[in-house]
Image 1 (tube, rainbow, N blue to C red):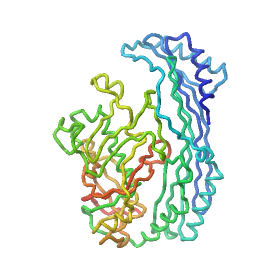
Image 2: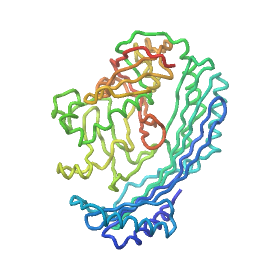
Image 3: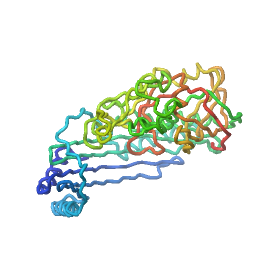
Image 4: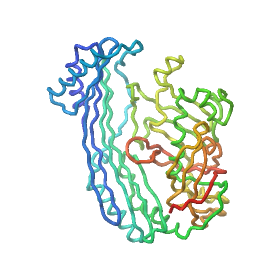
Length: 452
């Protein structure tokens, strides 16, 4: 979208225009967000948005001023510099202002592969056609979303920093329903750099199979069940606790009670907080995920292990908090290139080793209940099946559940193969992690839900 040389020319020009300031920072962003939607066996929308911006922060001693523009001609850039200088002259003194970073070395990553960069309407149309053909053959009705995100960002400053990053990623998300509306199934893959990883036909077969087999669901009594969370459900469950690894929160007496329900101030790095099957790490150079080697403040990111075999290994210290606590800065964010390590087990193999339980495809409408314990409530949807004696016995009606990920990840008894899956409610932007299916014991289902 924007090459390193193009961005360097723009940021250098702005910095030269701002040379009268004590210091200057330039943030560049630009790119494409596009998507194809399809439903009822036809493409319903092709969308594309191109945007770009240069934002400037100028420093006059301990005062700062900001301005931005979306026009890159000399007159517009000069007007931005003039506005930022005027804002700095009127700004308040900030005695805690930190010096700007100089040049940095970053882990080399290739986050914009050719197949992602060229992933346009024609490629998305072919995937939609493949999906619709399978839906028609299996007599289901598919509704799909195929987004693409191709973005270039850069932070540069008058001290020599030039932090350039480009990413191209895509996803395929699909819900299939039976024609009578009584069965529903979900399948998808999100945030991949390599378009060849998207098998639209297979994903549609999986979603359609769940839809067909989820009809005539039987009601079960609420209670505690062994559950197998497929990767999408587990990704949503995982997202409920990633903020715990922020040292500024996790070291407070209030937040310490999250881990293992101990008294405030008793859980420390090096203690066991989850089942041995849980290992969480940020893997900056992994070949599958979008990943950035650059933190928001321009510092280099590196691989970090947060939890290893259930033991808390690291907390995230940003620069400001690390200075106050006299701790080293953690060179990663837990939400960047997050990997929950998996095994070679397939979901089918996990089912075979389960005497009785529930196979859960999808969680939705998750809401917090108790902040201190991270207790959340939500519902199952798009395919819930009873497991008996290592086999799928049939569909069951959906449940509302109440559970904390702190409790749930202490009750993990099996982990499967990790796949790329978005952790948030939506599927756009950053947030994809490598997430496996997991088997959790004593998962509390509180009531039957009417969702399909």
